[in-house]
Length: 76
Image (cartoon, rainbow, N blue to C red; front, side, top):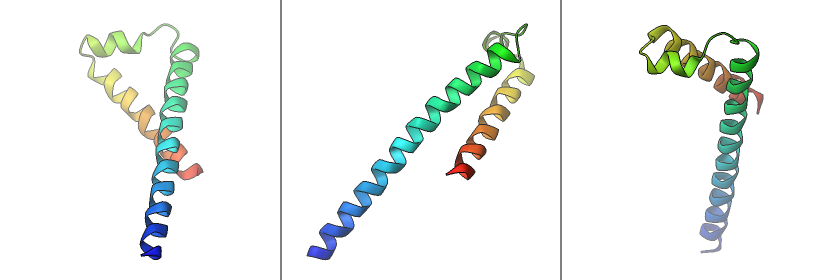
């Protein structure tokens, strides 16, 4: 019985650590997207282009999120 409680404790701790990492990664991702939007894409409103149906802008935004996810996943 003691082994089962230790396993549950370790699993809960690991889950909490992964949840915190995911939240931090989302915040960092949102900040990175905002920085790219302000610094790199000064004359282009990416969200407005996506809402108008610009598929290229949507693919570009998705590629940025995927690249950022890879960087964060490989960095831990």
